[in-house]
Image (cartoon, rainbow, N blue to C red; front, side, top):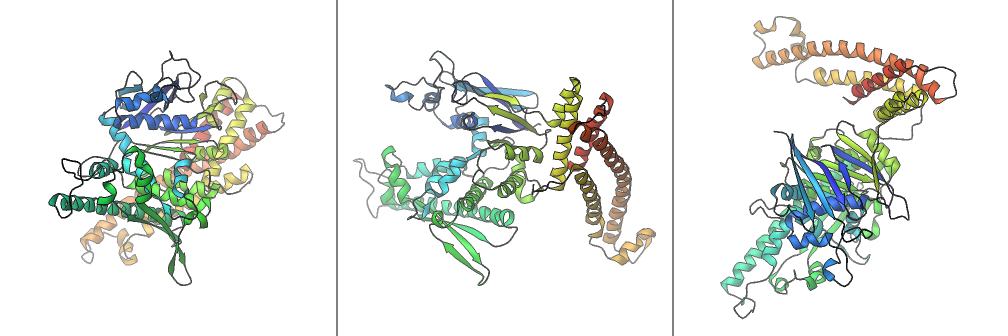
Length: 572
């Protein structure tokens, strides 16, 4: 059975979106570029609000769609667009697809069919939303205090982790146990030494221990991310998350989950963040207290990302429908560090430790055009949908969303319109992006001419062929003496074990397949690169410079097909 995916989401009169606006995911991942104020955050919070509605009561959802009235406090959390009239509808629709079967649900003031919905509730539990503001919460404490992450865990992590026994969220479980202490009929707390109080204290201690284990798991995953993906498997930095101020009877009897006790709760519970740096001279770890004072924002952001990914790693992993929504979460990082994080999230190198990312349907929003273009080069239109979101500044107009066509799509459109030079220019841009992504995947400042990149790509592909050969055959766990017998009738050789014969069978079969495939690939590869050299000289260079060389429709059609073939070859 096909997996469930988000097919589309529609906003009407919600935050920045005055008019009806549909974002068609087409069951793919989505990448959206938009300038500041264009409505990216409206998309982020719109999806979040929709999923959260599955665990909220009807009044808790309705309040977001009520017309704002300054005299009515129940409307003060409205998220309706402020320029629309009261008579206008306000809603969010979301469509989930599973093969040809589609289900559309709505949240609005008058119609809510997500409350308690199993699909949306599971999607809410397994999905994650991260933006720059959420990451900055990790280190916003005053410089004179240690960083306390309790508030971050309470708001951004515990609500999305599920207890394996009770099937409720960790936050709901915490609230259920610590809402209040046992009391007498007159409302007094259970007396010291009573079974009622002792049993309750044991229950609270068990909860504290369970939270310690969970936080320890998140710490372990976070440190693995930091070491493997930020510091190339070297000991440089690690984090400690210490749940050192825990629930107790005296704290709980103050009814700390009531609205006026937020400050007390968040000050008397603590998950202390300590960062340690490795000293190679002494092989010791040095603790850094008050990390927000001694580490820069980029370092703190990487630590925050690692902890959030660590928390994400502890979630339900077997759901076939879950979202990862990222809104400009990397703006405090330089481009090199952004690339490292994106390679993790996209699992560009197919690492088993990051395979859980592969199961997420991703929505990435950014205001950085350069970063957007890099992400486009890192992704594939077969599994990604690209959009540009724009809005004129200082106007009440709704944002405009349009498909961001690829260079190939633009080239095809120019070709159909007879604009041959423009077609050639788009093809050149497409080939440049393909070759740069292949020869310079870390996007260093490499400004070689296109002809040199083409030659470099040919050499790299050839070298990769050799590496593939070594991976298949040279690294086999078999001796040279045994391997030499592959040319003999080794099945009748009594000196060979059955296991050695089986290994020789496998190598022989793989070798035959490899030789055939290499003949096919080499013939295709050599012809393909030769064709590209001709296309570069005959079409791409003349179309980009003043030239009297005429371009012909058939040549451009062939160029489009050839560039599509090189993209497929280099992305395999």
